[in-house]
Length: 118
Image 1 (cartoon, rainbow, N blue to C red):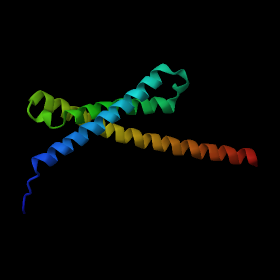
Image 2 (tube, one colour):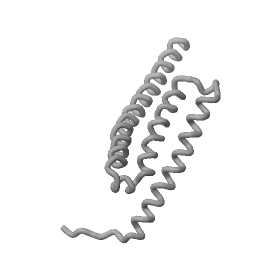
Image 3 (cartoon, rainbow, N blue to C red):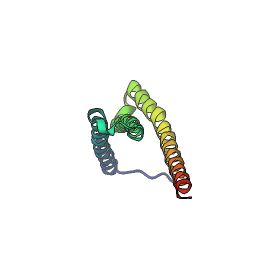
Image 4 (cartoon, rainbow, N blue to C red):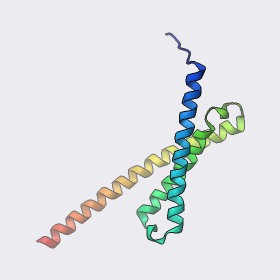
């Protein structure tokens, strides 16, 4: 099996893209969290789940901002690994639960609509 070397310029470009996208995502997460915290109209259960998911996404993006700098420091590497391992899987389960809740809500609304029509 052949191993290919990635040129240093490509690695730097990938790190720049990774950090740029993480910074944009952090700004979006902060906007969601600040909006939820300051506006009472957004204080609903669905928006609360979105806020919690954004908080987890914020921590994951902090870990991706660390990127390859975590390889040089053992504590930073462990913190980065902890953030990614502990927050990515719960976010996936949270999104699955949100989807199930939305589908369950739609089903209940359809059943109620049919009962009222008859």
